Image (cartoon, rainbow, N blue to C red):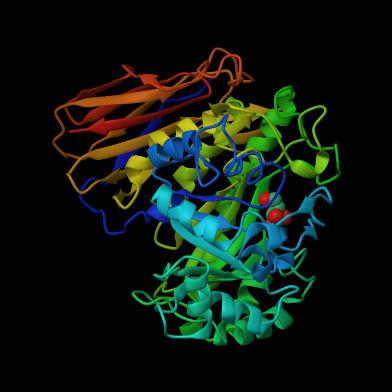
Length: 498
Ligand code: AHR
């Protein structure tokens, strides 16, 4: 049988801040993320909107406290020519969205639309520059258009002509995306040079400098990270990306169903998700070799579960449902990021609306919040809080002789002095009880919320959008120096200790 799960909370040795940017999101011109998702058009009278942006989505994302939003891709970014997306909408040239369904992109949602939307959301924009098929000049102009002061340059004048006087001062920029693949099929050596060239000409933001992110490795390609760390001068590099999806096979239609997965597919998906711990650990080790002071951030700017699309939907649109499996991926992954907050200082879930592991799904005027949304909302108490190290000894969850850790935990103390502990039990069958040694820290009360469901494959639908939502949790008790938590099977809990 399984022994007790135990943990020790180092309540007074917090040194590292959990950067709020770990809780970032991603919006690509892909399927119905932008068009038919965020953006329903200025002339839409059925769905309440501001300049064409859906207000119910804005509201929901504000509650989530999304710290940053990456745009316009993904693979799309390296095909995007920003000058086609400014000026009068009727005159904008169209293009083919070659990566995603071959649909026509009419460029009606462009730079102004995105940056104004970020202001509405109260979130920081993260723009992915076109390095794969755009020129150095084009990226230089884009950064000047967005960041240079009013009246100071041809690009800022053009911006003013298009109705925006003040610069947006965007700090976070991606210098290409997946340069090893859809971003140009480059070698690491070649890309490192391209990175140096493009970033040389990018304009700074007025108030802050630029935070430039190099297009990073796929999964366990440590060699890629090593080449970038070695070949790019560190004064021109603020972040190095990696992408990792919880996917079982890349063949079209060969992934798992988003809702009808087998027990084995559940296990394999969680194996992929929990691999994130090893991936960020090993990429960090490579970075430590070249940057022992950890000045450069590891940026996991694409992560999440990737399944077959829903029946009857365009395979190029990557529209998938979201069950308690996704809540497990989110809870466990965010615990991993929190616990690696010294190096992992930004991350972006793929993607925010209607694509892959979305937090929001829409169908015409209807909208629903997925289990993933609720996990991100519960965990947002960790944003910019001080990480409290916690060591966990957990039972395993086994499938056909393979094992995975069942319980993961992370903890932090916020500016008001409140301690939060988030726990995820990915075991689909067994409840887990964990005893946490509080090491003499004096807490008088514990309260919290839990997300679970009757069945693992349960999900919110447009007919029943609130089937899964967080509930008050009474399974945690403090006695003396010990906190005991009873976690149901496949559940995520966040506790507040005072
Ligand atoms: O998120 C979907 C796609 O996955 C992105 O466009 C690309 O960067 C990655 O391959």
